Image (tube, rainbow, N blue to C red; front, top):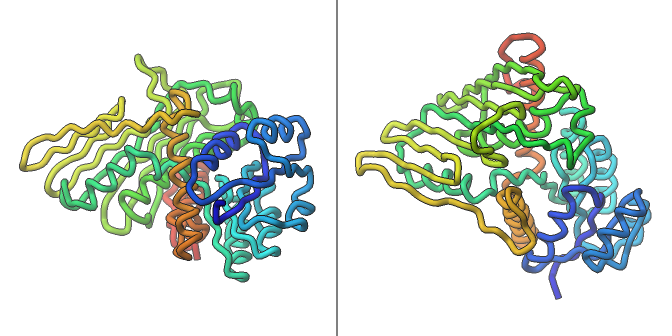
Length: 344
């Protein structure tokens, strides 16, 4: 029997990926689910054989019988649910975006710290196989010390068909997609001191921005550009690949479309295939993200067992969330924004 039993709150579009991944995670299982929509609750419960089904999260937590909570709801419900889990001393995974505001996110971190339970944000992009390959190349000094980078996600993929609510928010691409790309930039090049951003809305049918270009000054002196777009029409659709360029003191690295990693240094150029695994329950082109869901949930389980902090802990993700807030502020004011005061 698995050592850790969990409860999932939210049975929507992305939660199905999380449920599939939990079935593959070693030493953990989901034993209860919760959703206010009875049809979604029925569909997910029947698909994954979950007998304990709730429409009320408070009742589920009061009943107990599990070791952690996985919150897969939309952002406005996150703070109340995280604080509810903390009140029951339950470790908690929270879907991104972390919270509606940085103030809410800080309160959620504080609530979990007060009762000494771990809080992890489901920021899975850094767990993608190609991103891990880039990180390993840097850790083994294959291009020396990086001084410049570009993290790019440009696509014309119709994300609104599966998640129509994305077209309704005043904020879109930075909050929904750029948050991942900014986190990758932090993961690869380190924390950020200053940020400058520009945004644009190309698609007239949506309310938020669908293009953003963000300049980052990193603490280690490196400079990077994060550019994201859902208004880019390419000859070969790259969705959902993040493309990366890095220049270092001893060479360069390019993560190219088709999961092709090129590393050039004094020894020449090496080419690696860093394609993600197509899991039995996954489907193209989502398999890159779906594999990373399994990776982050396995990471959570292992850290829950060891007591060590997770890679995307609430405290760590505050730094990524601060970049999102700074990007919107910079785009509105057309001025650079210092990151330190936002996190303090």
